[in-house]
Length: 366
Image 1 (cartoon, rainbow, N blue to C red):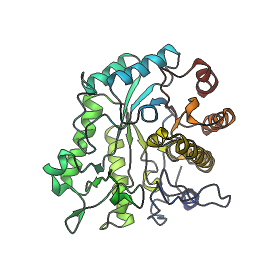
Image 2: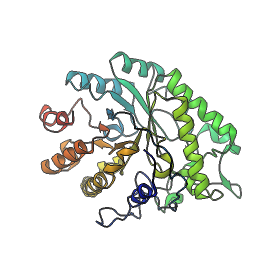
Image 3: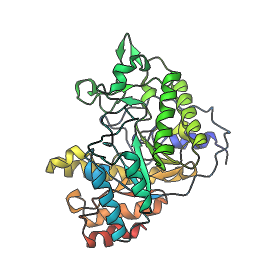
Image 4: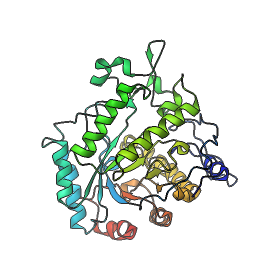
């Protein structure tokens, strides 16, 4: 299939990156003020005529983030694998270690030894030995101010007048919040060499078979780079990774859509299904989950057709009673995900989810 200008126009009507939704004639999406960066990218037709190959087959898996946030460890992960086996749910074969496996964003060649006392590689190998595929999350361009790499290589970062540039761009108040992130300069050959070592360690040495690459929009907010340059840099970065590790499943998240066409295997097509921090506050949890539910349904409808470029990934399916959605809402979400014919990940703590909920909500996803 060759990419056309009509493809691009339709794509841009849905928004510019994974989490950001756009306006279309049916008004099924919107650009929120908070949580998702505004659109800095004008439509670029330079990719028109590019031949796009058919994506890999959609995948199924379990993701750690929504049940455990960053508080994951080897025992938790392996207990989930055993629970999937016990409930005859081994078809959810990709076991995704999301955020929390290492000590600080940016120090990607290390892991938290307290959480993984046997070693990250050994945890991955145990997952494989049980018949599943180990998978891992990484935000390759962003670094915690407290990471060792900041002190060791300050020249690797994007700065303006000597000041580190904020790379997270989650809200307009980022500079006043405690989770700032610095931005690695991927034009720097030392940075690319470092990230190549990271990917080699995770894929070849540890044996992870899926990489969830998050916050890939970061360089579209670099003050000294044009949008076209940011698009080109990201596209070349993803294509090089895909070419070097063709068997590794590459999942884009927080990812600009245009430069990722034909360069990723799966693409998140909507926002996070819940905000873990808010789950500790009952009223806020219920309100935000209902808002996100409506946006998820809208995105599934608006971006279903993009499966010509990649496996559409609607984020995880949650169905525990505390989530706050009614039976009818959960069934609606379940059926929309099935009809999407894309990736299907679940995110509950499978060691405590009731048999009734597994039978009613999880098993039909297979």
